[in-house]
Image (cartoon, rainbow, N blue to C red):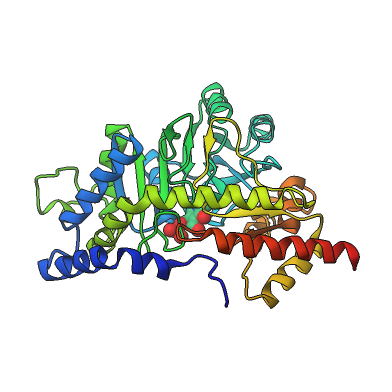
Amino acid sequence: MSIAFNDLNAQYLALKSQIDSNVLKAMASGSYIMGPEVRELEQKLCDYTGAKHCISCSNGTDALLMPLMAWGVGAGDAVFVPAFTFISTSEVVAQAGATPVFCDVDKRSFNLDPESLRSAIKKVQAEGRLYPRAVIAVDLFGLPFDYEAINAICTEFGLLLIEDGAQGFGGEINGRKACTFGDVSTTSFFPAKPLGCYGDGGAIFTDDEGLKRKLLSIRVHGKQDDENDPNAKYHNVRVGLNARLDTLQAAILLPKLEAFDTENAARRKAASLYSKLLAETELITPLTPQGYASSWAQYTLIAKDTEQREHIISALKVEGIPAMIYYPKPLHLQPTNSGYGYKEGSLPVSEDLCRRVFSLPMHGYITEEIVERVAGHVVRAVESFFNS
Ligand SMILES: Cc1ncc(COP(=O)(O)O)c(C=O)c1O
C-alpha cells in the first residue's frame, strides 16, 4: 500500500461535515468577496497567534510583497534573505525593485545564520552601493528562526524584520507563537502548509496600526483609507494589488483552524517517533533547540552525501513511500538570481544542504504504524547503502 507524503484527503474526510457545510453556506450567501468568514478568520488568527492585527490575503508570496510595498522598500535597498528556502522569499524583493542579499543558514536548524547575516550587512555597508533596509527570516520546515539573535542584529543596524512564516504557523519559542516574531509576519495557506486551504491564500500579522491600514489599502488596489466608505476602492491613493483572500477559502480554513492544535500535536508526536527510530542511523535528524517547538511542515533529514540520499529515496520509492527534496538548489544559484554575482561556493552550508537533505511523509493524520513503516525502510536503506 502506498503512503501519502501529505494526506490531505484524510484531513478532508475527518473535517468533511464542517467544511462542506461552511462552503455551502458561503456559496448560498452570495458574499464571495470579503464575506463575513474572512473577518471571522482574521479575528481567530489574531486570537490564535496573539498578533494585534491580521490581514488575510491572496497567498504567502503577496503576503511578503505587501509589507515591502507598504514600507516603500525599492530601488537601492538591500533586503537580506537566507539562501536555503523557497523562491518567494527572494522573489518578492526583486518584485519590489530592491536587491536580495543572500545569507547562509545554520547547518542544524536550517534557518538564517546570525553571523552570516551580520557579515552580509557589514559588506553591504562597506561597499556603499545599497542601503540595508530589511531582513526576511524564514521559519523553515516549521521551526521558528533564531528570533533573539536576528532581532538583536535588526535593532543594532536599524533594519525592518519580516518573519516568513509560510511554513511556520503553529511553531513556538518559549510559548510565544510563530507569526509574531517580525515587525510584520506572514504565512501561506497553500494546501500543503500546516494550515492550508483548497487553493491559494495567505495572511499578514502585525501589531503596527499604521502599517495595517496601508496593507488594507494595498490589498485592494491602493484604495483610500476609509473603512466606512463602500466606494473607497474607486479612490486610489497608492499602487496596490488585487490580493484578497476568497470567502470560500476562509470558510474552508475556519474548521481547519479549529482542528489545528490536534493535528499539530500529531505531527509533533510523529516527528519525535521518527527521530527516535532513526537515532541509530548515521543520518542527521532535525534539531529543535531548547524552548522551541516546530509545526513540522516538513520532517527533514541530512544524508551523508547525494549518493546516499539518492539510494534511500529510490529504496523508499520501491516500497511506495514518497520522499521529497526541499530544496535541490539554493536561491543564490537559481538562474533568476544570476545577476547578483554569486557563484558556487558563495554560501557553502546552503549548497551542502541542497545536496544532502530529504523529507519524509508528515501530516496531521499520520499514524504511529506509518511512521514505523517509513522509518524501518529508511533504516534498511541506510544499511544496504553501507553494505553496497
Ligand atoms: C518559505 C516560503 N515562503 C513563501 C512561500 C509562498 O507561499 P505561497 O505559495 O502561498 O505564495 C512559501 C510557499 O511554498 C514558502 O515555503
